[in-house]
Length: 247
Image 1 (cartoon, one colour):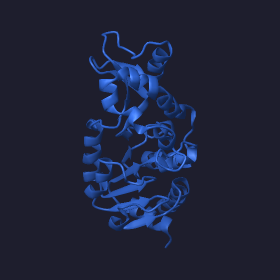
Image 2 (cartoon, helix red, strand yellow):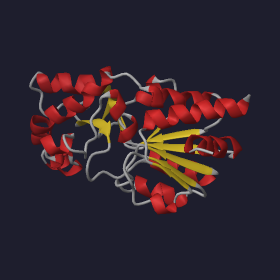
Image 3 (tube, helix red, strand yellow):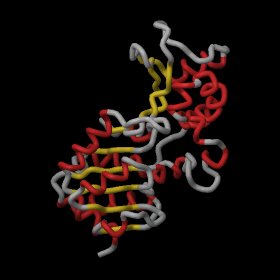
Image 4 (spheres, helix red, strand yellow):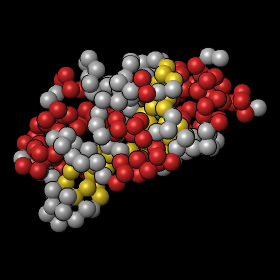
C-alpha cells in the first residue's frame, strides 16, 4: 500500500478529520513562502509589521510597512491550486470536517471551502482598533496613498489590517482551532513547517497526526505517517484513492 492509499484509508476510517495548512499549499499558486530563500523576510525587515510599531509609531508603520503589506496583498489576484480544490471537495463530501490555515491569502475560500478557520487573519479585511468598525484592506491602503497617514476611522480611531502582526496575541479563531483539533480523530498537516508558535502546538493536541510537507519538520517523529511531497501532488493522489474507496 503506497502513501496516498494509507492516508486515504485513514481519512475514510476517521469520524472527524481536521486539516492544518501552511504556506506550502499556496506556493504552488505562486505565493512565496515568507521564510524560504527569496521569501519576503529576506527582502523586508519583519519588524516593519510588528504590533509594537503599529501601536507606538503608527505613522512609521504605514510609511515603511505599506510596501510589505501591498506585496502580501497582491495575492488577491492569485488563483487556488489543485491542493486547495481537493481539500474543498473533501470537505463538501464530508470526508474532512475542519480546515484550519495559517495563510492569509483566502485561497481555501476561493476554492469553495466553507467556514475556514484563519488563525492568522485575512488580508481582505481591516478594522478600527477603537470602535471595531470593519473596513476593506483596499480602503486602508487608498487612505495611505492619499497621504492620510496613519489612516483613521470615522470615529478617529486607528485603522489596521485584520492580520496577526508580530507580537499580536491570537484571537478567538485560534481558540476554535484548538477545540476542533481536540475533537478530531485525525489531524492532517499540509504544507507547514510547524515552526510558528503558537499554531505549532496544535499537533500536540491531536490523537493521530499525519504530515505532508516537502521538508522534514520537528513533529515528524510524532506523526503516524510523514510524506515529504508537494501539497498539490500529494492531495491529488490521496483524493483519487478516497474516491476509489467510496465506490
